[in-house]
Length: 162
Image (cartoon, rainbow, N blue to C red; front, side, top):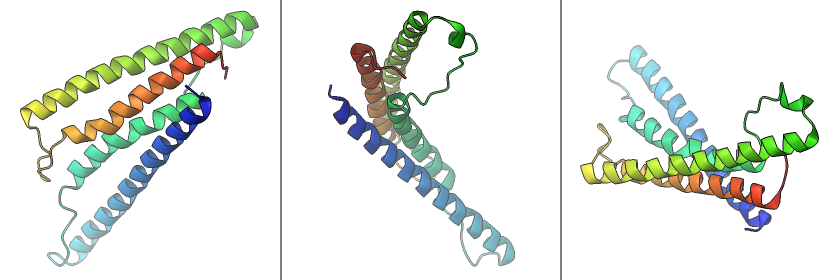
């Protein structure tokens, strides 16, 4: 897959994830202000109904959207205490094995996310306070995990290094 396309997709996913995280921060700030106002003037202002449900659902959608960009930029945590002393060829093998493991883990997580989505949909699971179905919130994370695996596989195929 062309690197430019992967970069555009990963960038769009990261922007979407960041936007959702900013919305969560704004929602959290609003909820805190409303709770403080309710302490000062009880009953005048309500709290954000379903705040915990909404934040849980949005975080589960937002965080995985950041993984493809991290993989593209090789921004994941790496411990190089021993690897930096290895010969370059050994470091390349180690990096390739780590990237292959990353792709496999992303696919493994995607498989289980499909299972969770199907189970959530079949059970008719809904967010307690909001009453929203939970299964659609699996979609962004599933797509992000698949893109993460594709980027890692492309890095292995192309031989691109950190």
